[in-house]
Amino acid sequence: MFFPTSFPKQHQNYQPGFEKEMIPNPIYDNPLYNKSNDKLKDKVAIISGGDSGIGRAVSIAFAKSGCDISIIYYNEDEDALFTKNKVEAEGRKCLLIKGDIKDSKFCKNAIENTLTEYKKINILVNNSAVQYVQDSLLDIDEEQFDKTFKTNVYGAFYLTKAALPYLKCGDSIINTTSVVAYNGHETLIDYSMTKGALTTFTRSLSMQLAKKGIRVNAVAPGPIWTPLIPSSFDEQKISKFGSNNPMERAGQPVECSGAYVFLASDEASFITGQTIHINGGEIVNG
Image (cartoon, rainbow, N blue to C red; front, top):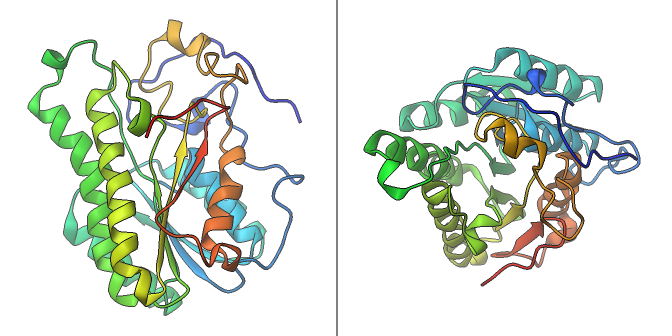
């Protein structure tokens, strides 16, 4: 399958961005990668940021694996409806839950709505994030710092805390971290900090829940072509996005989704507190 090695100049003035406006559209599905199977048969997953990018690819891959889905999204209605239709085309159910994960009450309601719809929860994927490019630490104001942390870290904490009482032995939590949690990024300092926090959250919570049989793992993508990219970087950087890793291209969301299916499945029954790195061969530190 062909994967783009460069991108036309483009920019979106909205976070976390609209997939429908990206050129080219991200590759969210590939029949050669994600064939229908029963790895997650009749399980229920909640995926924050499941409307687009990596979240869309994971939603569809989970559906192909026999899983019903709740998608939490901010306000990207068209992207969310598109993903819902793709999930339902696989014969699975999809509940859309619109709101702001910075609000703990919303997170509790999202869990309750999922329980009302499906009567159980087996998988939580904390995937929502925002990032803002700043050339200097001095340019990161309090509003940006709060929004980045409250979306990327507080949201994952609130959703996990609300879901945890309903998870049981064999269930799992998967956090989307990033290569920047390990290697840093000179213009994404606050974003990198949040991904470092999620990495430590993954390791620490996995220790606490191991005796209960609830597994906590993470996926750390490198440069992946998602709506966050054109909504974060300027046009010049977009044209070269992802070219500085050994594979010399950006990854596509579909190339991440299999790792989430694996970590959510019984095939990963002895794996917890770990991170799968999907970054085109970049060596990570730590």
